[in-house]
Length: 359
Image (cartoon, rainbow, N blue to C red; front, side, top):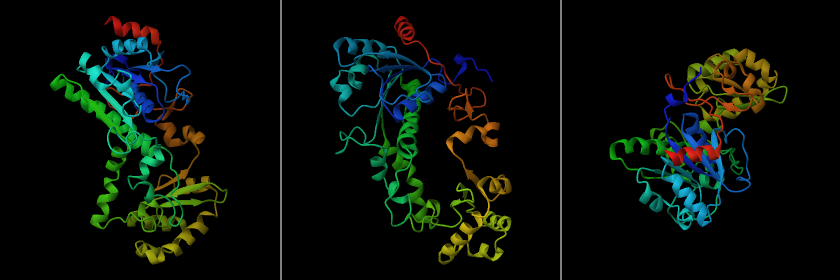
């Protein structure tokens, strides 16, 4: 469906992004998908991690923000912006004369989005770190992996993108909405540790109701059970099963031809090792795609574990048009009924600068 760019939800919102890696660029991509104009200020040579998918939808300018001339150019652009997205360590933008106080003195309506791992305050605020370190201090990392082994480094989905980018975007949108009432911008301190701590609320709350134990050897959602994990198939590929509910577990047993009496033992931890062994032997009898043909689309809570390059051709993903434009351009999410996002094209940086400064 073609969509007039002026009709997109964030049409008319100007975002001044400072080159970084990880959660900042992804947050800017999300904003661009819904119509925001992104003007990326980058140093000579870029950020060292070029990403043709996440870096889409920008106009780019190479400016040395450490120079007086570069600072003045950026301040002039910030005068015309609605949002700043930056991911430097705390204090860096202030030393450059580009911190919130300096910018808000000239443009009090600007929303100043700050993306860090540790946050703007606290003993670790100025320390280096990465996704793995941030999720380590939230309790998330300790709950992952096999008991008796070091927690495995997960993809940066949990920290950088989940606890970082999405919370930065939520904060920016909340601040823009509040600006409609107050007429004023504000600083969004988006810390990955804050976002992941928020997401861990589910795992902190469920044990209090007796529905979950966080310890890896007992955690239903961390692979401790025979009915929420992955299994190897005859061809060395894998499938995932997750029938947490008794009726779904009973259906899985039936479709696999396993003893129906095991359904009554689903919550009996003493029988879990026996059931793991039984499921393991069963799934090893067929290749992955044969299991997919047999189980996918049923209520056994099943999906094949597919590689990244297989995703576009998966029937469900293809039907929803998940991957677009011949590259790994995922359909903008979430999907809005009247004004869905679009994959924005890149723009000319000098032309966008001229447009901003003229209006």
